[in-house]
Amino acid sequence: MTEIWKYQGPIFDAHTHIGEPNTLDKMVQIGREFGITAQVGIVHSREGLKATQDLYPGRFVFAKYLFLKDIAHFNIDPIIDDIYRTKEEGYSLTKTWFGPRWRDYIEGVPEGFRIDDMRLDPIFQAVEDTSLPLIIHIADPDTYFTLHYQDPKYGTKDENLAQLENVIERHPRAIFQIPHFGAQPEIHRLPNLGRWLERFPNIILDTASSRWMARELSKDVTKAREFLKKYADRILFGTDVSSNKSDAEYYRGRYLAQRILWETKDRNTPLPFEDADTKDTGGTFINGLNLPLSVLRKLYWQNAIKLYGNPE
Image (cartoon, rainbow, N blue to C red):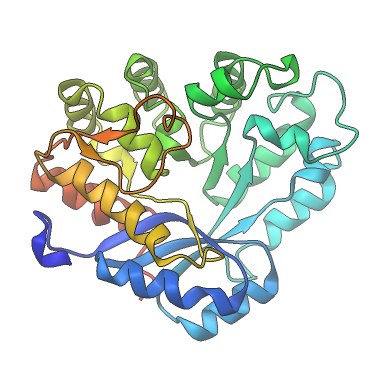
């Protein structure tokens, strides 16, 4: 399918998830159809890492998942040990997830827990000291806060973002890959996201997930396009696809949506899969940003290679 696109080069997917080893083939095969030749694989087990290395040598840069349970209870020593073992175990970066829903999965979370609590600083210091980039998810779409996060335990989106900003400010030598366009692809949030990029040279964004990017950035093509052009050196292509999904159209829809968004002039193209956030209000439609080739080269390949190297 790559012959139909404006950009004809290789693509580095900087945000994917590796599940069980026997689920990898479909993700890799369909990724190839859309030009994916390298990717960051977030791994949840040593077994998954070893099997993927054996099955697909030279395909993946691996991210070690730092588990929430210890972090949420300020049991930081095992996490710090994990970070210092990361490189020798074959990983190139780390990942942690603090989407507001994490509180639903961990029991006994101390009241008032914040990721900018000073007791967690040694974890971020270890990331700094090891020069290991950290993928850190902190907030979710505005739609989630409207539809799902009514309980005060989740906090507001602005409160979630402010906690991450405090962490970044205290750790200027750490490299933070902030997924989902810094959790701020909504047009009204782009000025704040731009302020972050101006203030913190140590952060980089990725474009996962496809429906969130398509839904929000399509709402004002001019503003979105100018933002991508201005910060072209600071954004990585990413999809957030997981190898545990068995439906081939799951992968195709997400790759297709982003390539339409970044490369075409299309208007009002239906998102090629259901957007649960808009299914009852008319659905999500893509308006292509028609980015210049110079920007697409950075978005799809050059920025990731500069940060993570070519896995080959």
